Structure formats: C-alpha cells, structure tokens
Image (cartoon, rainbow, N blue to C red; front, top):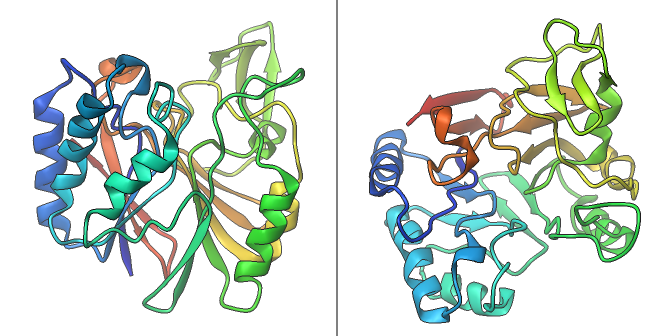
Length: 272
C-alpha cells in the first residue's frame, strides 16, 4: 500500500498558490492509495471568521480529487474561533474522506492505520505542548491489538525522541540550536535523514510509546517542519515528515512530502 503523507500545509491568506499547485501535481503523479494530512492543514491563528477558514481548508482538501484521505489535528488547526467539530464537518462533506473523528482506526488493504490527536498546548505546569493522555492510548491499544501491527499517524512527535539526543551548551559538529543549547543525536543512534531543528514534543512522557510499541510497527509525525529523520525506538520506526507548505517558518528550506510503502516501511521524499 502506498501512502502520500502531507504535513503542515499551513494554508493561510497571502499563502503561496504555488505550494498548492505543487501539492496537486504530486497527488496526480504518485498514484497513492491514500493521502494522510498530518495536521496544521490551515494556519488557524490567521482566521477570525469561520467562512473564510472553511474556504482555505477546502482549497487544500479539493486537491485530493477522488483519492481517499485521512487526517489528524495539529496544534494550529483550531487555534482560532472555529471548533474541531466544525472542521470535521467540512471534511465529512467529501466522499473520499476516511477521517472518523480525533482518534480512530482505518483498515485498508490489509493494514491497520491508527490516527491520534496529539493536542495543542498543555493546560498546566511542566510542558508547553499537550500530551496524549493515558486513557486515549489505552483505547488505541484496544482498537488495534487483535490485528496486524498498525501504523500510527499523529502531529506532534512522542517525547521519547529526546532520549535519543544529547544537549549541551558547547557546540559539537552536527548539532543544531535547541531550547537548552545545542542538540544532536547521541553517538551510536542509527538514523537516516537530518535534524535541522530541535524536536518539539511535550515535556511530559505519558508512556504512549511504551503502551503502543507491541502493537505498532511505525509512527509518523509532522509538526517540526525542518526535520526529515527516521530511526527506530523500542522497535517502532519513527518517521518524521517535514513541512509541505511554504507558508510558515520553513520558507528557507524546500518544502516536501513523503511516500510511505506500508509493507517495507521505506519512504521516498519528494521536494516540491
């Protein structure tokens, strides 16, 4: 099964029409079985009126044509006056939409695909970004444990990625700047692709990976626009997808999408 993964379009007023055209061209060329939008389809903070928001959301969803698509929420999608229920109602109006809410499973061509809402911002002390609560994780385990190992899609990467990294105030080759100084993968951590910004998971680990690891074979993330690395953690392949839109802070790096082969878990990155 071939999945076209599109992360962080960030469609907004004054955004790049060329970006949408390039995404449309990729959709037409790759002949994917499914398109997955990894959140932040629309840059919510730019909107105060629901009708304008809906127009910019439809600009992106219209690109899918008749290809089935599924979505997860990002931290910016509903960062405005529009609600997730309203956003979902727009998605449901498309006959090729497979989205079933915030947390759900799609079974397709012998694969179990798990979609989870990683939330927006943490309401309390100890973290900036939201956490995936334990009850949602346990419900996800129940939904996939009796089938083939699933592939997880969510916007914000799990905090376990930071355990694979080292941070410090003294610069070392291969480091990028992070909130606590410089950061890079620890020596011996095998990975492909690059880390060009510090991963931004929640600062609190709710054991999502530990609970899901026996039941998933890969986890696919967006959110961090400049990173495209891939590596294994607890036997699960972490696939980080960079931003596909040229409408946010990633303007100085070429936007791209990834194609995932669900059997081999190999990906192909296509620059837009």
